Image (cartoon, rainbow, N blue to C red):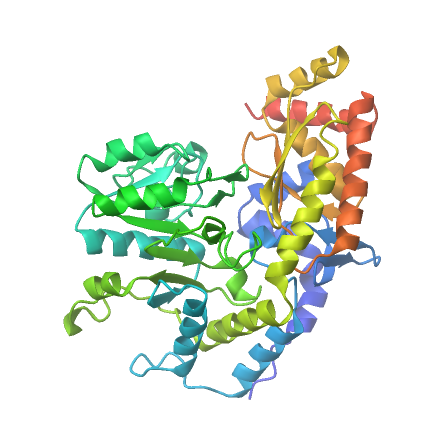
Length: 461
């Protein structure tokens, strides 16, 4: 066996070149952006909801890799499962057998989705959405899918067709024949359905961009309208699923909602192996795989591989054994209430919203004259700069990683690992309060950075 490859030595020798390597060989705008906003940190290790740098400073992760790290980083149960599956030397991906792990993971997922019957495994959230779109078109014999404005369902061609943001779609058309409505607009949905060519509506029960929840009763009423017209409801739970919002799925917050197809991914991976699942009703799958001639009409080269299936099984076991869905509900409610108490205290803090550990903090135009002038300066240069002004000191001074919840939005989204607790809530609220105090004082380093952002925004026009 060759001993010429030493991963530890390679990282020890070359890790210091990380930003140069990205600039030279990958997306050259990423290191440029990170340098500009001061996010060009070097993290050495991670565990749970925390990172550490070379000096041993710890950082609180309120981003969870855009939701991938639902269990936090390097959960010991998932690590052990992956070691075990590698040590078993299974005959994986033979293509002409029925391995046990996919069936076991499908069985566990469907136990949380009793109205659904079958599962297709893929590799990413976008792939799960692509699967749902194809299955809906095949099952109904119709071409068009309705989606919601400001939705994010992925960046592959089909998923991009139901992406509600022009900044992602521009330059990649023409796309599939799909139509956007506003989240919650039943009249618009009814108008589209009356045209007779709608296969499905796809919806995030809570939109990632801006953290907007479907209005009460909308999902149930939409499902009724769709089914009356022979169309399907697709729930995109790629980010909201597996406990994030305090129930296993976000659509379960509304009684009586039973989507025809459900997409999950991100947290199912345990943070290690890309995996996604599209769950659906039996009759839909039987329409797609209608004969032996169509047995591979839709498949994924690495779908249902043993490592991904082992990770998924371990994730579901941890969610149950450690009560993480309930922790998301309880800790999320605490975090949301602590932040909501600050709305009356800060005139630039407009609203705190969300469910479980998916929380949006929205900022808005202040009333006082001095702050209004500074706010206008930022908005004139580029919308979303104030939220960025808050995100940067949270990281640089308080070592807390967060994100702005979408291009040109004055919203910060919090999606921490589901393992965070009261101590982490205290740390975040204390840091956020300090940043807001400085922002409302009208001076200080935060507004100096604001002027830097303005110059950068103007230069990029």
